[in-house]
Image (cartoon, rainbow, N blue to C red; front, top):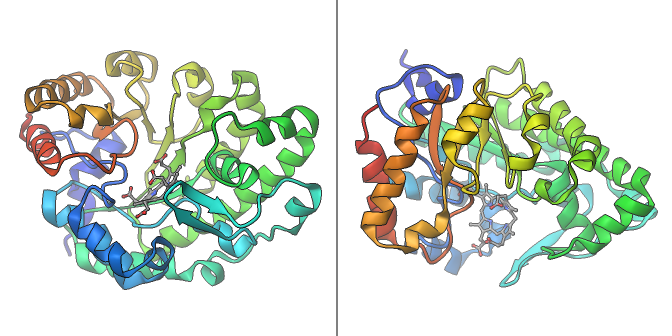
Length: 343
Ligand code: CP3
């Protein structure tokens, strides 16, 4: 039986040598792809997430078009919130919660539910995708970190200053703790379901974890992230923790038992490697480089590939999600460049 054991993506996460650098990009299935927009004409974003056949199709689109070295489950970090009692929809301004979750009662009324019951369609999508991918390309499952989810719950959507969340942090920290603990329990079950359904790696997205003072990061975020990562320690599935803006928090992040850390573009990869020698690193091209000319794309991508050879393992990625206006030709140049690089 052939297995995914030889996948260069999984090998780099485990810190095993490979002759080239694997690449996938965050949000690789999304609005920059005309074939994605064609599906979205027929289905709303929520319908798409809840229809396993459609989620499978959209997951496969960037694999077929570009030959990325890993696929990522098509879904959203907010999906597990709906069965907890916090429904949302996606408009042009991003996600909107039906009601923000702010008061003591709001938080008490959230339910940690069986992931298989509330979000069984995600497990079904994973099984379909695994069938399509076969032994060639590994599948990444994911969840949002409790803190990043809490920002959307408390603010009711995206936010600039996180006024409601920070008011809670500085006036009723025990309430924020209660919310964080519920979210942590939910995510642990949600990720266990994904592992059971067959994902080959998981990524924990902490897009907004960087908005706190390091002391608050240590108190509010770190113990919950640790609990989630530790719950998967014996699963055999490598884990990636993506904390956007992680540079001020590396001393804390370094205490986590995790195979790989995501890096955004605000830190030089070589600097990250010096500070994090025991971790595989994933990143870290500025997504906006894709809006530049192709010589820039090539030279900046190659620089990252070369620097990455010094890391325990290196997976090429953007430092954050690809943007809807990224030109297809730019992505083609990026993938050709990275996959053509030899270590
Ligand atoms: O990476 C992938 O291709 C897999 C699917 C995926 C999506 N969102 C699809 C999506 C993943 C892994 C996410 C993660 C996610 N979602 C994060 C963490 C990573 C990050 O980018 O910071 C966050 C913060 C969200 C919340 C979210 N979902 C926002 C803020 C938005 C709207 C704004 C935006 O950037 O699009 C979404 C919607 C969303 N999630 C879309 C897609 C393809 C666009 C929806 C559409 O088709 O209209």
